[in-house]
Structures are given as C-alpha cells and as structure tokens.
Image 1 (tube, helix red, strand yellow):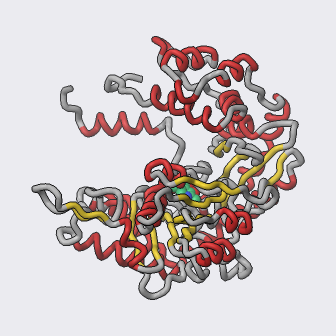
Image 2 (cartoon, protein in one colour; image 1 turned 90 degrees about the vertical axis):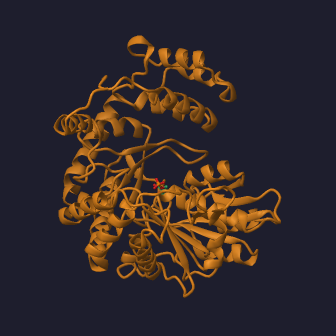
Image 3 (tube, protein in one colour; image 1 turned 180 degrees about the horizontal axis):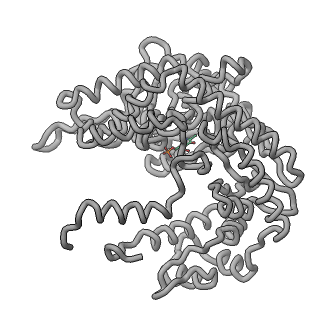
Amino acid sequence: MSSTSADEILTRLTAMRAHDVPTHGGRTLAYVYDSGLAEADALGREVLALCGSTNGLDPTAFPSLLTMEQELVATAGRLLDAPSGFAGVATSGGTESVLLAVLAARDARPDVAAPRMVLPTTAHAAFHKAAHYFRVEPVLVDVDPETKRADPVAMAAAIDDSTVLVVASAPSYAHGVIDPVTAIAAAARDAGVRCHVDACIGGWVLPFLREDEPDQEPWTFAVDGVTSISVDLHKYGYTPKGISLLLHRSADLRRSHFFASAGWPGYTMLNTTMQSTKSGGPLAAAWAVVRHIGMDGYRALARRARQATIAVAAAVSDIPALALAARPDATLLAITTDETCDVFTIADELLARGWYAQPQLAYGDLPATLHLSISAATAPSVPALVADLQAATDAAALSGPVAPSEDLVAAASSVDPAHLDDATVAGLLAVAGMTGSGGSLALPERMAPLNALLDALPAELREALLLAVLDRLTRPRPIGAH
Ligand SMILES: Cc1ncc(COP(=O)(O)O)c(C=O)c1O
C-alpha cells in the first residue's frame, strides 16, 4: 500500500461518513446524544485529540489522568448522593461498568460455587454479556406488564443463597421507566446481597429533574441497600464516546474488580478496570465537557430534553394507531402500535424522512416497540418530529402491517441455533434476498421485513442468525472497495 496524502484521506473519510447516521442535529434518536452546545462539542473534540495518546495504564506516569478521574468521580458522587467513603472508576462505557459490577459481586463471594444474579427482564443486555463472560447465571424476573417496572416481590422471592447480585434500572433502556429501587435494594440488603442500579442512560439526567419532579422514584445511594451505580458520561453527559463511571458505596466493595499480575518478567500490571492500556482521551474530554457545561448547564439540558420527551409522548397519545408502552420517567420513549400498522415500517418511514428511531423486537409478553432517546438538541425539532411521526404512521397504515414471508419464517425456524453452518446461512440470505454480487451480503434498503422475520423467531435463533450476519458483514475488504 503506497502512502496517501492527508487531504485525500480526509476526503475519503468524509465521503464514508456521509453514509453514517448524523451524530448532531437531534434527528438520531438512539446511539448518539447531542447537547446542541457547539462550544462544548468543540472543546470535547479538542481535548480528545490533545490527550488521545496518553495512557491510563500507569497513574504515576500520567498523574493528570488520575486527577481528572478523581474529580469526575467526586462530581458524580455528589449527583448520586454517595456517602463518605465511596469510591469509583472511569470505564470505557456502560457495558464495561456493568461487567465490572458483576465481576466485583461474583469475586467478593468465593464461597458461592454457582453464582447467580437476579435481574428484571428489562435489565440491559450488558448483564447477559456479563453472565456469559463470568459464568454468573442470570435469573430473569418478569416485570409488571402494564408499568414495565420490575416486580420487587417477585425479585425478592428469586433471591437465594447463590445470589451474588440484584439489579435494578434507573431507567430501563427499553421502556424508560425507573424500577422500584427502594423495595428491590431492601430485599437485597436483607439477604446480604449487593444491589447494582444501572443508571447508565439516566444517571446524568434524573438528578437534574428531581427539583421539578420531587416524586421521582428514589434510586441513588440515598436508598438503603444500593451498593453500586453505573452512569455514562458519553450518553447524557454529552461527552465524546468512550467514558462511563462506576461508583461503589465503599472502597471495599470496589476492591474485587481490581486486578494485579506480577507473574511475568515485565511491568507489574495493575488495573482498576477491564482495559490495561487505555487512552486518556475520552476521560479528559469528559472532564473538560462536564466542567464546561457545569451543573446549571446540565439542569437546563435535562429540562429541555425532558420537556421535549413529554411533548412527543403527548403527541403519540394523540395519534390513534400509536400508544406508549410505558409512561416515561426520563427522556426515553417506547412506542407501540395497534393492529393497523407496525413499528418496523414506521422506523423505515421515519428514516426516509431523516429520523433514526430504533426498532426493539418483542420479548416474552412485552411487545415490539419503537425506541426514541430524546436529546436536548431534539427539543427545537419536536413539531417536525411529531409531524413526521404522524406521516410515517399514516404511510405504515396504508401499506398495512408487515408480514415476513411464510417460506422464510419456515426456513429460519427450521434452523438449529447451536449448529448454524455457513451453507445454511448462505441459503437463508438468498431466500431473504440479501445476497449481492459474488455471494456477498447485501443489506436491504427497508429493514421492516427483516425485523418482522426476527420478531417472529425465538431469541436464541435471532442471536444465532444476527451473529452469522455480523460475521459476514465484518469480513475484510480490499482498501477502497465499495
Ligand atoms: C441502561 C443501560 N445500561 C447499559 C448500557 C450499555 O452502555 P454502552 O452501550 O455504553 O456499553 C446502556 C446503553 O444504552 C443502557 O441504556
């Protein structure tokens, strides 16, 4: 490969990025979070670049990173009502924070041979990843079918001698509701078990809304029995990606996810988190953005996003074919439809109108929904969003609910998820019309038929099929090939 000029590379990068969903502008309603504050964004980008080559592996070599982490954790501690003696770490994201909370709970209980954790079915999939990585059995407890909140009585009943962790969300990603943390944490405390509150998505919004909404369900360290809380800065902290915080009620509780190895002839590896070498860029950018926006700034942003959420929720209730899956407690919405249309087609129709909303498949008795994470930057566009949601719903009703072909459902259903070979995947992709030139994978323009197919399949089969697609999607390609 010959060398390429910086100009040429940036031109190509810009061309490639034109196919990505926009990160700014408030029209991408999942994956990205936009404050709408240009100066904060510019500062975050500048600091990210400035500190991108620093290494959090050794806090004595890069004391600036240690100071920034300590200051950010202290700021989060104040927001989350942490008691004196609390401790925390900065991680690469919500999933890493969750992984560490589960690991710490497991490793603090070497006496438990087959550890288990009690989760509401709405807990984030990151807990399933932790269960898989660390061999902690997830005990899933159904949520209230109406409110979509965890059922504390059923969760208490699910705790046994092997339980090392109990989990609640503030709020849940899928439905945007806060679980009854007080009762769940009390049950965990009474059983002598840790209780983690996953506030990855809501932890930097909900504290700023408490003044306006004093009856918000309590979920912070002020609740007796809560032992750890995760909160992501790269979500509603509106900082560049790659930064979350995990706080523990005491330094003792944190200790069991630390790692040391002096068992080789190189440097003694000492890590507080999963990563060893870690860029200081995301941490420094978050430190800068959090200080720049400030607590009053975040209060204003949280109010803006919350008011926009309430306005969109009201509009959804006014569209006869739509309903809210749950009353939103924060800035997330989950929308369902009646029998005249489906959420997958509405997602496609919204995309055609310049909005990215995220389809969520049905799970158990919980119906398929359309997920909207509302950012502060979406607020000025609420009238446009509501008009386009109405138009997308009308278009979806006109075409009628999408139904996957019976042949395809039959072909997919006959697959054994444990033994999905390449030839079977190739056959299924051909039946689904997803084969491009030379047998390569070609994603369809409209995703609704594919989502409807997945929706009709059990979760295990969805996972196996999507992993096979991901495997094909991520194979190497010659540089510059389109
Ligand atoms: C409640 C909750 N927990 C965990 C995560 C995982 O976070 P990440 O995608 O940063 O790994 C998310 C992401 O949306 C979330 O909403």
